[in-house]
Length: 110
Length: 114
Image (cartoon, rainbow over all chains, first blue to last red):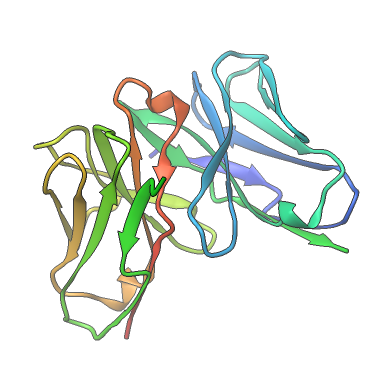
């Protein structure tokens, strides 16, 4: 079935550092979604991308829809402790359902 | 705003027991979903309901049943729990036709089957 891969699986960074993560698909997508999950909570939508090459920001977060339409990237600038969590990418599977990547777990060290 | 509410938050079952996970949304969304989350595997779709009165299987439906009770409520039932069903379960909803704007998730039910 459809699979998404996320890299890296986990990362430990110092507060203030920038973060980069990516998501790749075996198929072409027309939408990419990025979610963040805080510990003990459900995922919350951060950014949605709808067009190849699109670059969209949400505060310190910036996401890009890859030109090949098989990948997407999420960057976080000047990380802070509340950035800790799991970041998921998601793309349309069929109809109105989405497939989620396995997530990138981010830890921020003070 | 309550959004998506799931109950219970935690549950421990013995193998073979049954239980129903409840989910309700107050956003007038047409579509509702049940996902399970396991370490390193992301979120996998169990069942979904595109609209009131319809339900369909997702990626991992075996061992589960669902009921779309009305527009607000979508329940997930485990008839005979197995240790492999130990997981965190998330309910989500979306407005039909605007699914590309994403889902709204509940805060999850952490289920342990012993």
